[in-house]
Image 1: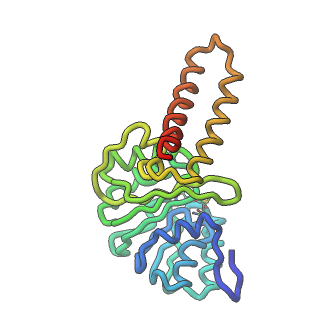
Image 2 (image 1 turned 90 degrees about the horizontal axis):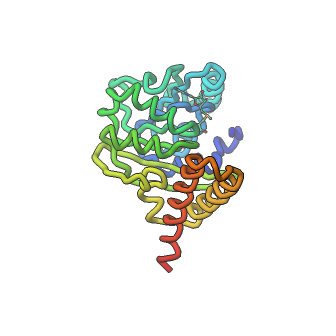
Image 3 (image 1 turned 135 degrees about the vertical axis):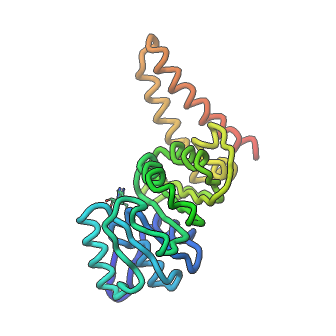
Length: 236
Ligand code: SAM
């Protein structure tokens, strides 16, 4: 959101994401919408150059307007482009943020542009769902997760995943719950999975006993959550 006197004020979710962007990064924000994230980082002197990439004309126009209004057109290029097509080697982008979309779409965007990723030091990703699919893409494409955080904003849970070039070997449990998140077992993490557990238990009660296969899928998910959450009580 833009307040003309104070500049951009970010949602809690975007603020948390901003806190992971290294100072002085040359940033590409894919799916930038209003370009709030790069504008905030520029206005606060955290970075000096960014590209806001957008595939849809409406958000692209909003971003252009906001950048123009902020007088930051020399520091923030708004480009109408699909995914990683928004940058070339000449832009010297070293950090990419992709936030606020589904994990599978993010994996598709990374896959489509993966030839360019060797130029990039860090990915900062905030999937709205299918986090396991995104982690799997990272693992099978030469990226290692270096940090994770789970945050709440307006009663929703969001996972932030930071990855760099490297190797990692994640178990099925790591893929689903996040290797760092499940170790940290924060209060937000526990609340998120307790909520999911209740949802799955309710769903299980509605599936007739004869639908054994469907019940087994849910039971496996439920058991996995219980095991991860039980680790929390085991630590006390
Ligand atoms: N990143 C912002 C955030 O986290 O608040 C905006 C999220 S918004 C829900 C998702 C944006 O991604 C939309 O503006 C959409 O047009 C854009 N988008 C979706 N697919 C894209 C792609 N392949 N390339 C660039 N932008 C894309």
